[in-house]
Length: 95
Image (cartoon, rainbow, N blue to C red; front, side):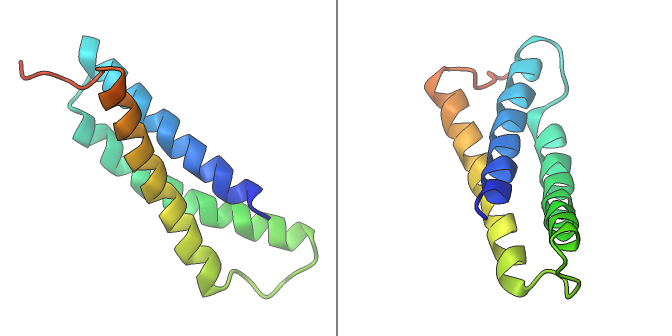
């Protein structure tokens, strides 16, 4: 049951670390990359939940708890990614 939340959390964490690393060399500012990441992973995690429910035979849909926990997993993944980049000093400096 928690695998879908863990995968959403890890995807958000890795996405932030990659966004910060790319910016350090040549990329766009991290806010331009992180904001769409949140907007893609939220509905993406919910559609993963819906596909899992359909294959298990549950045709009712996602309840509000699933929606809340998916969005919390994305937000905590973003925060964890920022903490990791801060810890390894990958945070961008002003240009």
